[in-house]
Length: 300
Image 1 (tube, one colour):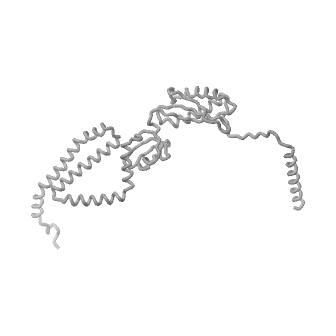
Image 2 (cartoon, helix red, strand yellow):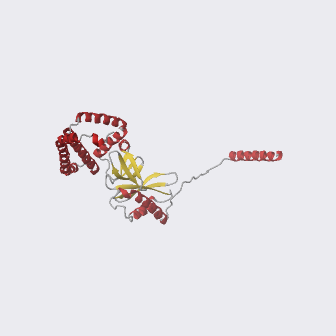
Protein backbone atom coordinates (compact mmCIF):
# COMPACT_ATOMS: atom_id res chain seq x y z
CA UNK A 1 0.00 0.00 0.00
CA UNK A 2 1.28 3.44 -0.95
CA UNK A 3 1.78 6.06 1.75
CA UNK A 4 -1.03 8.58 2.02
CA UNK A 5 1.11 11.50 0.84
CA UNK A 6 1.84 9.62 -2.39
CA UNK A 7 -1.88 9.07 -3.04
CA UNK A 8 -2.79 12.78 -2.53
CA UNK A 9 -3.28 14.84 -5.64
CA UNK A 10 -1.28 17.86 -4.54
CA UNK A 11 -1.95 19.75 -7.74
CA UNK A 12 -5.73 19.35 -7.31
CA UNK A 13 -5.55 20.43 -3.66
CA UNK A 14 -3.59 23.55 -4.57
CA UNK A 15 -6.06 24.36 -7.32
CA UNK A 16 -9.03 24.02 -4.96
CA UNK A 17 -7.27 26.08 -2.27
CA UNK A 18 -6.56 28.87 -4.74
CA UNK A 19 -10.20 28.81 -5.87
CA UNK A 20 -11.41 28.95 -2.22
CA UNK A 21 -8.91 31.60 -1.19
CA UNK A 22 -11.08 34.62 -2.16
CA UNK A 23 -14.04 33.12 -0.26
CA UNK A 24 -11.84 32.43 2.81
CA UNK A 25 -10.50 35.97 2.73
CA UNK A 26 -14.02 37.36 2.34
CA UNK A 27 -15.26 35.24 5.29
CA UNK A 28 -12.33 36.36 7.46
CA UNK A 29 -12.92 40.00 6.54
CA UNK A 30 -16.62 39.68 7.44
CA UNK A 31 -15.80 38.21 10.88
CA UNK A 32 -13.18 40.93 11.49
CA UNK A 33 -15.61 43.63 10.39
CA UNK A 34 -18.28 42.43 12.81
CA UNK A 35 -15.72 42.25 15.64
CA UNK A 36 -14.61 45.82 14.94
CA UNK A 37 -18.28 46.87 14.79
CA UNK A 38 -18.84 45.31 18.23
CA UNK A 39 -15.79 47.08 19.70
CA UNK A 40 -17.02 50.42 18.35
CA UNK A 41 -20.66 50.04 19.39
CA UNK A 42 -20.13 48.36 22.77
CA UNK A 43 -19.55 51.61 24.76
CA UNK A 44 -22.56 53.20 23.05
CA UNK A 45 -24.82 50.24 23.91
CA UNK A 46 -23.52 50.06 27.52
CA UNK A 47 -24.07 53.81 27.96
CA UNK A 48 -27.60 53.47 26.58
CA UNK A 49 -28.44 50.72 29.08
CA UNK A 50 -27.07 52.91 31.88
CA UNK A 51 -29.16 55.91 30.83
CA UNK A 52 -32.42 53.93 30.86
CA UNK A 53 -31.74 52.90 34.49
CA UNK A 54 -30.97 49.19 34.14
CA UNK A 55 -29.18 47.36 36.93
CA UNK A 56 -25.44 47.06 36.26
CA UNK A 57 -25.61 43.26 36.38
CA UNK A 58 -28.44 43.21 33.83
CA UNK A 59 -26.69 45.78 31.63
CA UNK A 60 -23.54 43.63 31.55
CA UNK A 61 -25.55 40.54 30.62
CA UNK A 62 -27.39 42.38 27.85
CA UNK A 63 -24.09 43.64 26.45
CA UNK A 64 -22.92 40.03 26.43
CA UNK A 65 -26.08 38.96 24.57
CA UNK A 66 -25.53 41.81 22.08
CA UNK A 67 -21.98 40.60 21.45
CA UNK A 68 -23.13 37.00 20.98
CA UNK A 69 -25.90 37.99 18.54
CA UNK A 70 -23.59 40.27 16.52
CA UNK A 71 -20.82 37.70 16.23
CA UNK A 72 -23.29 34.93 15.35
CA UNK A 73 -24.62 37.11 12.51
CA UNK A 74 -21.06 37.63 11.30
CA UNK A 75 -20.33 33.89 11.39
CA UNK A 76 -23.53 33.12 9.47
CA UNK A 77 -22.60 35.61 6.75
CA UNK A 78 -19.03 34.23 6.64
CA UNK A 79 -20.38 30.68 6.33
CA UNK A 80 -22.50 31.80 3.37
CA UNK A 81 -19.34 33.04 1.64
CA UNK A 82 -17.82 29.56 2.05
CA UNK A 83 -20.79 27.89 0.40
CA UNK A 84 -22.24 26.36 3.56
CA UNK A 85 -26.01 25.82 3.53
CA UNK A 86 -26.82 28.28 6.30
CA UNK A 87 -30.58 27.61 6.18
CA UNK A 88 -30.16 23.90 6.88
CA UNK A 89 -27.68 24.62 9.66
CA UNK A 90 -30.03 27.12 11.31
CA UNK A 91 -32.94 24.67 11.04
CA UNK A 92 -30.83 22.03 12.76
CA UNK A 93 -29.84 24.50 15.47
CA UNK A 94 -33.49 25.45 15.93
CA UNK A 95 -34.55 21.83 16.49
CA UNK A 96 -31.64 21.28 18.87
CA UNK A 97 -32.53 24.48 20.75
CA UNK A 98 -36.14 23.39 21.09
CA UNK A 99 -35.07 20.02 22.50
CA UNK A 100 -32.70 21.67 24.96
CA UNK A 101 -35.44 24.13 25.94
CA UNK A 102 -37.83 21.34 26.92
CA UNK A 103 -35.08 19.60 28.89
CA UNK A 104 -34.15 22.78 30.75
CA UNK A 105 -37.59 24.28 31.33
CA UNK A 106 -36.92 24.84 35.07
CA UNK A 107 -33.75 26.76 34.30
CA UNK A 108 -35.60 28.80 31.68
CA UNK A 109 -38.28 29.63 34.27
CA UNK A 110 -35.57 30.92 36.60
CA UNK A 111 -34.08 32.98 33.75
CA UNK A 112 -37.45 34.58 33.02
CA UNK A 113 -37.86 35.27 36.74
CA UNK A 114 -34.40 36.88 36.69
CA UNK A 115 -35.53 39.30 33.97
CA UNK A 116 -38.63 40.12 36.06
CA UNK A 117 -36.42 40.87 39.10
CA UNK A 118 -34.25 43.22 37.04
CA UNK A 119 -37.35 44.88 35.59
CA UNK A 120 -39.37 45.24 38.82
CA UNK A 121 -36.35 45.97 41.05
CA UNK A 122 -37.71 44.72 44.41
CA UNK A 123 -34.13 44.87 45.75
CA UNK A 124 -30.62 45.82 44.67
CA UNK A 125 -27.18 44.39 45.30
CA UNK A 126 -26.15 45.47 48.82
CA UNK A 127 -29.70 45.59 50.24
CA UNK A 128 -30.49 43.70 53.45
CA UNK A 129 -33.44 41.38 52.87
CA UNK A 130 -35.36 38.45 54.27
CA UNK A 131 -36.25 35.95 51.56
CA UNK A 132 -37.15 32.27 51.86
CA UNK A 133 -36.64 32.57 55.66
CA UNK A 134 -33.03 33.74 55.13
CA UNK A 135 -31.84 37.13 56.39
CA UNK A 136 -28.77 38.75 54.88
CA UNK A 137 -27.25 41.05 52.28
CA UNK A 138 -27.92 40.61 48.57
CA UNK A 139 -24.44 39.80 47.28
CA UNK A 140 -25.18 38.99 43.64
CA UNK A 141 -28.10 38.78 41.21
CA UNK A 142 -27.80 36.58 38.14
CA UNK A 143 -30.35 35.57 35.53
CA UNK A 144 -30.88 32.21 37.27
CA UNK A 145 -30.27 32.78 40.98
CA UNK A 146 -30.01 35.40 43.72
CA UNK A 147 -27.16 35.00 46.25
CA UNK A 148 -27.65 36.21 49.84
CA UNK A 149 -24.74 36.58 52.27
CA UNK A 150 -25.94 35.88 55.83
CA UNK A 151 -24.65 37.30 59.11
CA UNK A 152 -22.62 34.11 59.67
CA UNK A 153 -20.87 34.72 56.30
CA UNK A 154 -22.59 31.83 54.55
CA UNK A 155 -23.99 32.19 51.03
CA UNK A 156 -27.56 31.17 50.31
CA UNK A 157 -28.26 30.59 46.61
CA UNK A 158 -32.00 30.98 45.90
CA UNK A 159 -33.57 30.23 42.48
CA UNK A 160 -35.11 33.38 41.02
CA UNK A 161 -38.46 31.67 40.44
CA UNK A 162 -38.70 31.06 44.20
CA UNK A 163 -37.72 34.67 44.89
CA UNK A 164 -40.59 36.16 42.86
CA UNK A 165 -43.17 33.64 44.12
CA UNK A 166 -42.61 34.13 47.88
CA UNK A 167 -42.96 37.02 50.30
CA UNK A 168 -39.83 39.18 50.43
CA UNK A 169 -38.89 41.79 53.04
CA UNK A 170 -36.47 44.53 51.96
CA UNK A 171 -35.04 46.15 55.10
CA UNK A 172 -33.05 48.75 53.11
CA UNK A 173 -35.72 50.05 50.74
CA UNK A 174 -36.85 53.16 52.65
CA UNK A 175 -33.70 54.50 54.26
CA UNK A 176 -33.88 54.64 58.08
CA UNK A 177 -35.07 51.42 59.73
CA UNK A 178 -36.92 51.01 63.01
CA UNK A 179 -35.81 48.30 65.44
CA UNK A 180 -38.45 46.98 67.89
CA UNK A 181 -37.12 45.49 71.12
CA UNK A 182 -39.51 43.86 73.66
CA UNK A 183 -38.87 44.49 77.37
CA UNK A 184 -40.96 43.31 80.34
CA UNK A 185 -41.29 44.90 83.79
CA UNK A 186 -43.17 43.86 86.93
CA UNK A 187 -46.75 44.86 87.67
CA UNK A 188 -45.58 46.70 90.76
CA UNK A 189 -43.13 48.88 88.84
CA UNK A 190 -43.82 52.29 87.33
CA UNK A 191 -44.18 52.44 83.56
CA UNK A 192 -43.26 56.13 83.58
CA UNK A 193 -40.02 55.46 85.48
CA UNK A 194 -39.10 52.57 83.21
CA UNK A 195 -39.76 54.73 80.16
CA UNK A 196 -37.62 57.54 81.54
CA UNK A 197 -34.57 55.43 82.31
CA UNK A 198 -34.83 53.48 79.06
CA UNK A 199 -35.02 56.61 76.91
CA UNK A 200 -32.04 58.06 78.75
CA UNK A 201 -30.03 54.91 78.06
CA UNK A 202 -31.05 54.76 74.38
CA UNK A 203 -29.83 58.33 73.84
CA UNK A 204 -26.30 57.17 74.71
CA UNK A 205 -26.11 54.45 72.05
CA UNK A 206 -23.92 55.44 69.09
CA UNK A 207 -25.86 53.78 66.25
CA UNK A 208 -29.29 54.95 67.42
CA UNK A 209 -30.58 58.02 65.59
CA UNK A 210 -31.68 61.10 67.51
CA UNK A 211 -34.27 61.90 64.82
CA UNK A 212 -36.63 60.08 64.81
CA UNK A 213 -36.22 59.88 68.56
CA UNK A 214 -36.47 56.57 70.46
CA UNK A 215 -39.81 55.66 72.02
CA UNK A 216 -41.06 53.33 74.75
CA UNK A 217 -44.69 52.20 74.48
CA UNK A 218 -46.92 49.76 76.33
CA UNK A 219 -47.39 46.68 74.17
CA UNK A 220 -49.65 44.46 76.29
CA UNK A 221 -50.35 43.20 79.82
CA UNK A 222 -48.92 39.70 80.06
CA UNK A 223 -49.60 36.94 82.52
CA UNK A 224 -46.68 37.85 84.74
CA UNK A 225 -45.25 41.08 83.29
CA UNK A 226 -46.09 44.45 81.81
CA UNK A 227 -44.69 44.19 78.27
CA UNK A 228 -43.10 47.28 76.75
CA UNK A 229 -41.65 47.90 73.29
CA UNK A 230 -38.55 50.02 72.80
CA UNK A 231 -38.50 51.68 69.35
CA UNK A 232 -35.14 52.92 68.04
CA UNK A 233 -34.19 54.06 64.54
CA UNK A 234 -30.98 53.27 62.67
CA UNK A 235 -29.52 54.75 59.49
CA UNK A 236 -28.38 51.54 57.79
CA UNK A 237 -30.29 48.24 57.79
CA UNK A 238 -27.01 46.32 58.17
CA UNK A 239 -26.93 47.49 61.82
CA UNK A 240 -30.38 46.07 62.62
CA UNK A 241 -29.28 42.86 64.39
CA UNK A 242 -26.29 44.38 66.26
CA UNK A 243 -28.45 47.27 67.51
CA UNK A 244 -31.24 44.89 68.60
CA UNK A 245 -28.81 42.94 70.80
CA UNK A 246 -27.21 46.14 72.11
CA UNK A 247 -30.56 47.69 73.05
CA UNK A 248 -31.69 44.49 74.76
CA UNK A 249 -28.53 44.27 76.88
CA UNK A 250 -28.61 48.00 77.68
CA UNK A 251 -32.27 47.75 78.77
CA UNK A 252 -31.46 44.89 81.16
CA UNK A 253 -28.51 46.62 82.84
CA UNK A 254 -30.32 50.00 82.99
CA UNK A 255 -33.48 48.59 84.59
CA UNK A 256 -31.42 46.56 87.05
CA UNK A 257 -29.55 49.70 88.09
CA UNK A 258 -32.85 51.56 88.53
CA UNK A 259 -34.25 48.82 90.77
CA UNK A 260 -36.96 47.83 88.28
CA UNK A 261 -37.80 44.16 88.20
CA UNK A 262 -37.56 42.11 85.02
CA UNK A 263 -40.04 39.39 85.98
CA UNK A 264 -39.97 35.72 85.06
CA UNK A 265 -43.11 33.60 84.53
CA UNK A 266 -44.79 32.66 87.82
CA UNK A 267 -48.17 31.55 89.13
CA UNK A 268 -49.84 33.00 92.23
CA UNK A 269 -52.56 30.94 94.00
CA UNK A 270 -54.82 32.73 96.47
CA UNK A 271 -57.22 30.79 98.78
CA UNK A 272 -59.85 33.11 100.24
CA UNK A 273 -61.99 30.64 102.25
CA UNK A 274 -62.47 26.94 102.79
CA UNK A 275 -65.76 25.68 104.23
CA UNK A 276 -65.84 23.29 107.17
CA UNK A 277 -67.43 20.49 105.13
CA UNK A 278 -64.33 20.49 102.91
CA UNK A 279 -62.03 19.97 105.89
CA UNK A 280 -64.23 17.11 107.14
CA UNK A 281 -64.10 15.37 103.77
CA UNK A 282 -60.32 15.81 103.63
CA UNK A 283 -60.00 14.16 107.10
CA UNK A 284 -62.12 11.19 105.94
CA UNK A 285 -59.96 10.73 102.87
CA UNK A 286 -56.82 10.95 105.00
CA UNK A 287 -58.10 8.33 107.50
CA UNK A 288 -59.24 6.02 104.70
CA UNK A 289 -55.88 6.20 102.94
CA UNK A 290 -54.01 5.66 106.21
CA UNK A 291 -56.13 2.58 107.02
CA UNK A 292 -55.55 1.15 103.57
CA UNK A 293 -51.80 1.64 103.86
CA UNK A 294 -51.74 0.08 107.31
CA UNK A 295 -53.80 -2.93 106.13
CA UNK A 296 -51.48 -3.47 103.20
CA UNK A 297 -48.47 -3.39 105.51
CA UNK A 298 -49.99 -6.15 107.78
CA UNK A 299 -50.79 -8.35 104.79
CA UNK A 300 -47.23 -7.99 103.58
